[in-house]
Image (cartoon, rainbow, N blue to C red):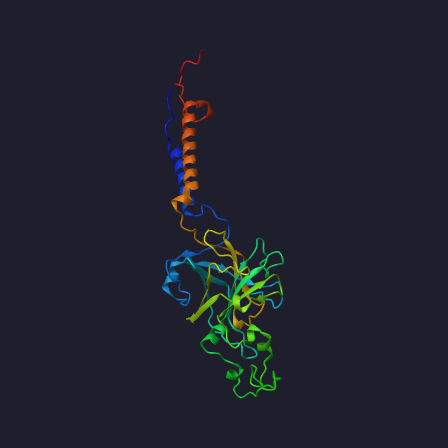
Length: 344
C-alpha cells in the first residue's frame, strides 16, 4: 500500500497551528474584536510625562478616534467642535501615560471672564463590565481623568478675577472670626472654606481624578486620591495633553491598569472653550479597548503553552499516520489503475 505524500496543504496547516501557538506564547493577539483598540507601547526607562512633544511618543502606535456631539442631556452639542482626537499610550514597569492630540486654533486657558470657557479633555475608564458610556450607572461606575487648560495655566502662575478686571471693587465677605485670620481679604471665601476644588488656591495637577455612577453624580476624589499627573502644550494650532498615573495604587476608585490584566474599556472627550463648550457640551467618543503589553514570560511560566504546542504537534502527526494506514477515511491511499480489473 502506497503512503500518501505530505502535501503543501498539510504542511501549511501544521505551520499555522505552530505559529498560532507561538503567538499565544508571546502574548500577541491572534484575533481581535471589531472596533478600535489602543495598544500601550512598552518603554524601558522613564516616560515623557512632562513632554507632550517628546520624540519618544513617535514610538507609540497612534489611533485616530472619531468624536460626536453629546446629544443626551443639556447642555447638548449636536455638532462636535472637535471631530477627532489622536491617542497614544506608553507604559513602563511603574507608570502608564496617555497622550491626546487634537487640532484647536485658539488657546482657551482662562475662565475668569463671565463669558470665558476653557479647553479641556478627559479620559473615561470603566470600573465594571457593561458600564454605560453616559457617565456610568449604579451597577458600573467610572473613573474619569479630567484635564483643564485653566488649571494648567494656573500651575505656571495663579491668576484671579482682578487680572481680568483690575479696577473692580472688593466683594464684602463675612469674616471667619473676629481676628479675620481665615482665607480671603477679610477672612472668608465661601468656596474655599467649603472645600470646592474650583475655589482652591492651588492645584497639585492640571488633571482632576473623578468618579461617576450616572448623570449628575460626577464627584472628585479626595485630595489624597488625586494621583493623575498632567502636562500640556499648545503648539501651531494643536493641543497635546499627557495624563499619567502609577499602574498600581491600591485605590478602589481607580481603574485597574496592569500588564497581563484584561483590556480596560476607555473613552475620550474634548471641550473647545471658544465654542462655548462646558459641562455636557462636548465632543465624545464611543468605547475603545486599552490593551497593555503582556508581562515577560519565563520558561517556568510558559510550560503550559509549550505542553499545548507539543500536544498539537503530536495529534497532527497521529492524524497523518492514521490517514496513511486508513485510506477509507479520505486521507489518501492506493489509487486504482485506470481501466484495471474490477472483478473479484
